[in-house]
Image (cartoon, rainbow, N blue to C red):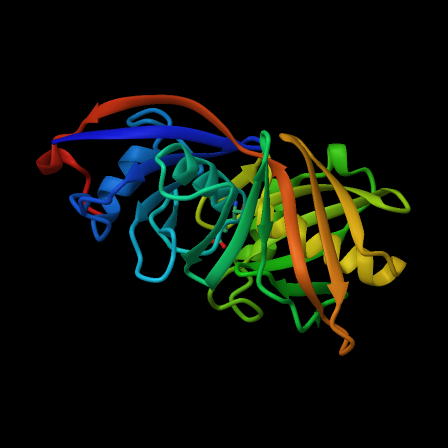
Length: 265
Ligand SMILES: N[C@H](CCC[C@H](N)C(=O)O)C(=O)O
C-alpha cells in the first residue's frame, strides 16, 4: 500500500504526520507504525501522529511512540497544530482533542503556544519527583548534565517495575540560572534519549518554578529552546500551563509498504 505523509519537528523531536480525514489509515496495526517510524526501514521519527476530524473540535490527534504505544506528546501536539493549520482544519487559534482531553493552542509566527492539562500533584520518588503532564515523567536533578549517561541511568528508572509498572519517561535537569534550566530526556516508547520532550520539559519547568516561586521558565534542550508559563492553583499545583516553542514542516513524501512483509509484533 501507498501512504502519503508529512514530516514535522519541534525542537528536534520529530514526527510522521498522517492526514487521516478519510479514515484509511489502520492505527491498530502496530507493526505498520513501527515500520514508518523506523529510521532504517521506514521514514524515521520519534513518533507518529494521526489527524482526524472530531465533533465539537477542530481536529483530533492520536500520538504513537516509535514502538506503537500511545501517550500524550507536547512537542507532537505543537506540530499537529501547525499541520492542522496547513491543512486548513483550524485557524491560528484552535481547540482540539488529544488522549489526555481537550487542548487549546495559538499559532504565533513559527511558534505554537499549547495549553497543557493542569498539574495538581508532585509525588516524591526516591529523592526525585514524579509529575504527570499528560505523560508520566520522573524528574531528577543532576550535575554536569552535558556528560551525564542519560540512556543508561534513564533506562534503570524507566524499567523500575516496582515504582513504575507502566514505565515512565525520565528527565535529567541542571539549573543554568534563576529562570533557566537545561533538560535531557530518556523517552519511554522510543527507548532512547530524544533531542527534546515537550511534556517532559513542562514537568521540569513546573518543579523548578515551584521551588523558585516563578511563573515562567526557559528550557534548553539539545534540539532548541522552549518556554513554559503557568499559574499556581492555590493548592500546591499549577494551571494555565503553556508550552511555547517552534514547530516546523520538514518534508513530505509517499511511502510504499508491503503489509504482508511487516515483521509480526
Ligand atoms: N516527546 C513527547 C512525549 C512522548 C511521551 C512518551 N514517550 C510516553 O509517555 O510514552 C513530548 O514531547 O511530550
